[in-house]
Figure 1 (spheres, rainbow, N blue to C red):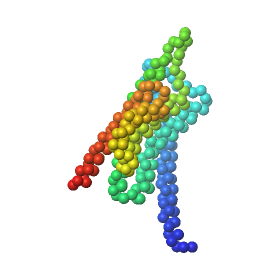
Figure 2 (cartoon, rainbow, N blue to C red):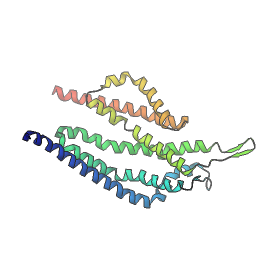
Figure 3 (cartoon, helix red, strand yellow):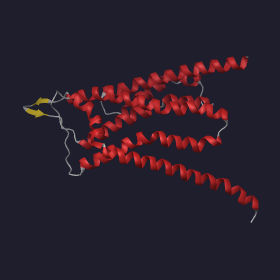
Figure 4 (tube, helix red, strand yellow):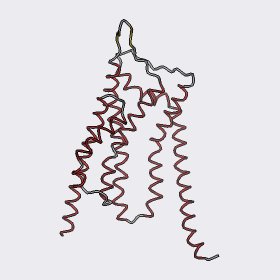
Length: 254
């Protein structure tokens, strides 16, 4: 067999071995985080329930489960959900350690701010959902309790449905808050320019509210609370591009 073929395969095998090792470390971190989170699943779920508790009058409100196994699987889902966030620093570090050796020093410096901004923006979106959007939306939903046609109308949310709604809120806001990272990466790669993004501003406003309508429950309050921040993040991205373009132009004229 030609020796050059063997030499060409060696780096690929080495990369695959390293990738497997990185994945094993990431899975190990997730497994350890899951083991810890399942032990504290009740406390974690208690934190997730607080926005709903605040929506009810003091001492009122309850969560129910209509299937015997529902409460058990809610704890599993809570532990999985929390374990991902706890282990994310290790997972992202393993990803960076695998990718970084293939980048030039200039590329590392350019990419590192985006790597740092991603979890910060996600947490900002999740915090907005947890502290502002969910309490506001839940008070709106609970406000429909009362007498209707001589019958009592009462909110009795199921544990599984409530957890799914909370996860939907947190993930929707966390992912959508990655918009500046996406736009700035596209701009840095030369795929879009600031002028192009300015030209489609009106379409992006429509798209922001359309996306909010898809990702949030079908109430106007939640949709506005996601759509408006998306528009603000879009404008912030344009402002950052304006600043970086000016800085680049100044460096080129020196």
